[in-house]
Length: 89
Image 1 (cartoon, rainbow, N blue to C red):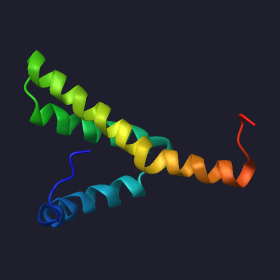
Image 2 (cartoon, one colour):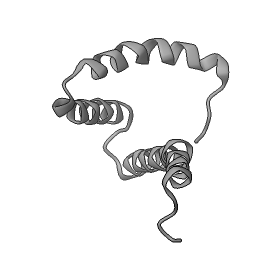
Image 3 (cartoon, rainbow, N blue to C red):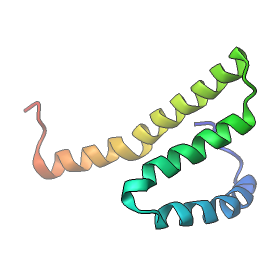
Image 4 (spheres, rainbow, N blue to C red):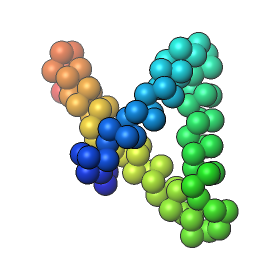
């Protein structure tokens, strides 16, 4: 993940806070759709419909999934392996 400078984070966090609060208030059945809509709307607003820019957008989304796995899902799975044992053993 291309981590942004710490001084850039508060402004983004202030803007994201209300969106996150809203998404948390949406019913569980609608939450994924609302998140997908929000991400798609942001991507469509930032990237012109040209191959070069759409390819950039896919790269960003791919990096997001990899970072989520590396920073959140992987450590969670490691904890569960410790708790319940490894499937491979």
